[in-house]
Length: 440
Image (tube, rainbow, N blue to C red; front, side, top):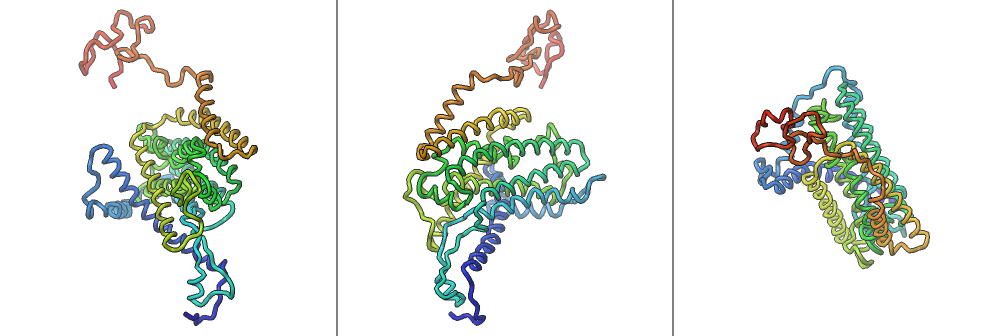
């Protein structure tokens, strides 16, 4: 096929066109995925709670996400008095935009050769070859870029709380910001363990290393677990969803938002979940790798059919991780804020520092094939050191109450003499002789 335009495209231009096509395609795939991820979460929670879930709109309820979107667009867009209008409107965008920007450095499949196609179109340069990578932007600092864009989400949280002119929203934004900043530290340290072994910030190089050896999930399981915990905290997902602690702060930093602005906050949350899951697949599950233990695996270069298989494998792993995130939400109770901060500063950060030190030794002595042993050693060290580490005996202590069967207040500890210290019977209203007591 000859070209009527008489033009020649360089390999760089063809790669750029593929990059733009991947970005446009994946934006729509992930946006659609976020819409149906909400339905998936409702279905999974219904299954876990022995319910049916949404099944009224469309066949098997498949049109429910469309109905939800229309509902949000048609709802009244109410703006409270006294808000900072510019920042109030920008805050949801600061949540969504960083998540949308982050996915461009995730490799969705290997490298394919388009030389034959470009020559058939008649736009090839003489003697040029056209291998292209199926990624939005193949930059050598892709890991740093992804972390940098993810960290921008804290501005949307803090601005949403401050611009609402609501003290409770402001407090919710402050503690959500503190949470995100705190968990960025152990996340960065866990990520540094992977980068230190790979010797590069390039996403493709990290995938290639795992294709030639073992998944980082096998070699560095503790780093993978810590990274995933921080991923949940960064996305404000349960058990770290303090922004939705209605009994404490009404609804957190998004209390005053309505209509599509309110929906954008949750769209950003689901976008963070999808992109974060893809990031986890890239770092710890070998991308499109199907063999976690040996080097016999799918290669980096591939034909069109193999590239489709690689893309399907990546998306399958991402779906699995998103489903795990949803299962955790409906399984674990929410942390108190002091527990959440203690977990980061007194738990995850010291552990990741020790883990990074162990990985540094293994890299220095060229024993990276035994990183799994270093991870087990760190786990054993934590297990044996925990009993001797100092703890605050006042944290999480039981408060003694009159009438409690589990932690009763005795006469010697209280001032209510000659009154029973435990419940006399199982009546809803207590015996008057017991005085004031908790009736929760």
